[in-house]
Length: 118
Image (spheres, one colour):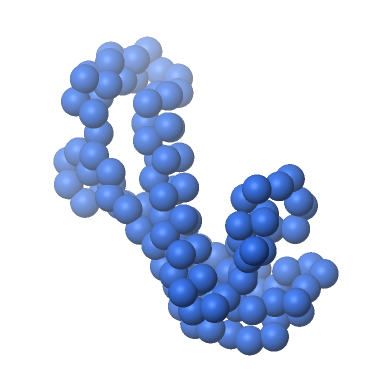
């Protein structure tokens, strides 16, 4: 099982998808290259209406929070799949970005360097 999958399935403190260039307790043995994952999500019109009313009064907009969380998870999962196809068991130098690409849609992209660690 890859470190990425082990991390997702446990409460291990060593995160194999890191925003640094190393993982404490592991040594990078091989660099596999850049991997990325992305997804584009659209707002739900009915929930968008309810959120716009709530926005008038301030506070968190739970629908949007969940939408972005789901998008991040999907992008990370796609990046992990790409890393696994290259034979990597971890990703380092992880970065995440999001942008609006239309009035009601957003893209979330995650990318990093796929590596083999021991």
